[in-house]
Length: 481
Image 1 (cartoon, rainbow, N blue to C red):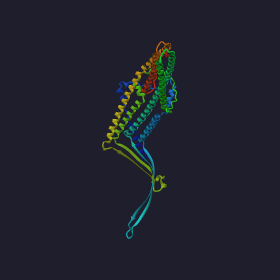
Image 2: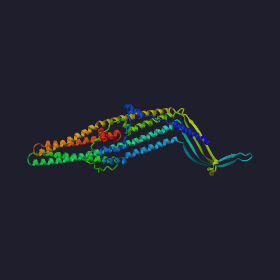
Image 3: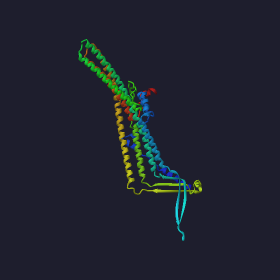
């Protein structure tokens, strides 16, 4: 009997394993539908050190330390990690349905019964009896996954787990870009604070020169009021830049998971961007952008759930059995002579449930269609983000260079103008105009350099991480003659 049961279970296992469902590449189909020729592109080689490429491009060791602190201490990372652990536990829970469920049990009872015996010629006699019953054993139940319904449920849970891992990576990428943006904004504001300090210094120098000329009777009080107004405006500008810098520093500290006390000291310098971005391939985003990976996995999970719901319409097979001992005496429970067992099988075919099962199939098919549409929307948004960042990259880097040269020339003009003012060759209004133009040009140059850096960060986020710089053919030939 045991040999027969073992052989039967082995056959069932083989059949169940052979009927496991296969997943369809619906995400790839949806992507190739939106981007003709995407399926024919070769799979790009994704760098393993995506975060390290950021630091190498910017040349900012401080930023690397901030990123590490952010990924270690930010509460959003801890929340995403906890959700990933929950998804992994859900996968184990769902997967457990594929295996036999075995449980051990022990029961004991004691009862008293009363019976009445009628004896002719005598009064009725009541007879009582006290009985004991003890049972020890194991029970087994197993739904044979002959059609792969439980396998589909587990596969859907696995896809959900992988999607949760992708969302965890997306959270890390979003925080990395956020702290990078905040860090460079703090650096830019630190530079502009220095510019404001220099503006105040120049304004006070102009005020001293104006007072000297007023004392000599060369000019009147109008010029003195203008010079004092310039000083007060420079002080207000300095206070505004100082406050904005402290706010930016506090944002960096908050993202890094530390107390935002504003004590961080960014350097008064922005890194240069020398390497242009590589040629863009949409397949690169599909291979490494976390939100696209998560959206594609959600399609696969929804597809598996459709298959699971469809197989709920098919008959299900269940096996159950138990083995143990039973006796009126507790001491006999370990005696094999008192063993008891049973085995049973059942076939369940849903006949009428008010349309619930077919409605569940329709509901999951609708969710699958929604996940495909969500993937396509995410893909289109990603394409737009990449194209915007690529289109702006070269323009902003070139504009920043021209703005820096413009600021240098404006500073030369302001220096010459002040010298001429001290010699009485031009009016104070002309000097103030030249000074304001020079400092506006410096601030504009800083804004453009910051914009170029932020745009490069946006490109990193759009592509799903850093990238290797494009290879210069001439340099390659010179290195490999």
